[in-house]
Image (tube, rainbow, N blue to C red; front, top):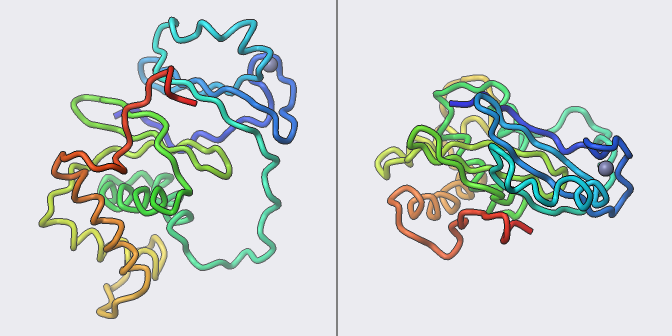
Length: 213
Ligand SMILES: [Zn+2]
C-alpha cells in the first residue's frame, strides 16, 4: 500500500511557479513514482510547451483539466459539528486500517452529494483504489476499495454513524437512529452494487487520459 494522505491542489503552477488566477484553467497530472504518487498542477502555458506529451512519461497514471477558484475563507466558527467530509479527512490522516471500510462509505456518501468525484482508479496488489477529487478545493483523496461484504455493511454503517455523532474518538455506540445513519443507509445501497462487483449506472468508469476532462 502506497502511503498517501491528502494531496492538496497547488495555488501556483508547479513548473513555472506563476500563481493561478481565479477561474484559470489548469491541468492536473498524476504519476506513480514507485513508492509515492506525485500530483502536478500545471498552467495552460506549461502544459502546451512542456507537458502535453506527459502521457508518454514513465509512471503516468492520469490527467485532467480543472478551473482554479480562490479558496473560500476559513469558516468563522471553529467549533463545528462533525460532517461526513471533516470526518473523512480526519480518518484519512489517522490512516487506521480498522477504519478502511468507514472511509470508503464516507467517500461514497460524499460522491452522492456531488462533493467528491472519482478521477482515477488504480490497481495496487490486486486492490482497487479510487482517487477522488474534492469538487470545491481540488484536494485528492486516495480511497482503497475495502471489498465490503454485504453481511458487514450494517456494522460499518453503525460505525460511521457513531463516528459522525461523537467524532473520531471511540465511544459507546448509541441505539438511536439518526438522520446521518439514514443517509448512510441510502449511500450504502450503491455500495452494495460496488461490493458485489456488478455494474451500476453511477459506478465510476476507469479514467483514461482522453476522457479525463
Ligand atoms: Zn506554468
